Length: 245
Image (tube, rainbow, N blue to C red):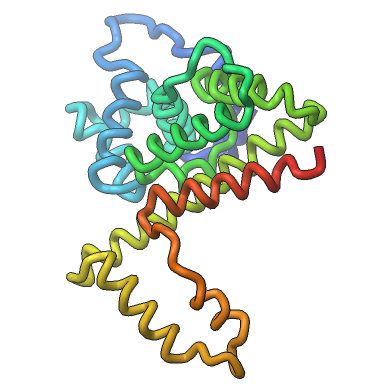
């Protein structure tokens, strides 16, 4: 059991208490709210204002409840974060079973992860703080492990491969979103910024001082759209993860 100090603070989330025991019925009057409704409100708040805006007070105000009453459903913010991550993990549109083309299936799974993380921009940061896996996350994990089964990796290596792939997608989406915020606040289009960066690098990249950079810039540019960049890096990531098989 996590050690608990003041109300709303704990030393960790107990996965058995959270997922196995579920939401315990309370004595007396029927509950006014539900854990699902509270989680939905927290996700909507994070989508609109960012993860930093998600406090027990703000979520309570969003559903029209008193702050202290929320602790009857969710004991602390850590637990609320676990519930939020698992809820949006349910956005995965998973086939009933893999197609057998593991590369295509893994690529599709990663694309689905990217879509969900862009839909919920707070998710990459939340994943780094996640302490446990709920039912929706477990369903996604089980599917990904099934996709990787034909690769020839041992079961622990498949778990590591899934973790590395998810980490890559989360890191890349965080970078994409940061770049988009820079464009929004800077008043220039992404194309204008890329052109300015290209001109700057070409002005510095002579063959004597930066020979490797000069050779790289001499090659015709690839498609620099966010989707095209992600596709290229994803293919390299998948190839690298399974290179030794």
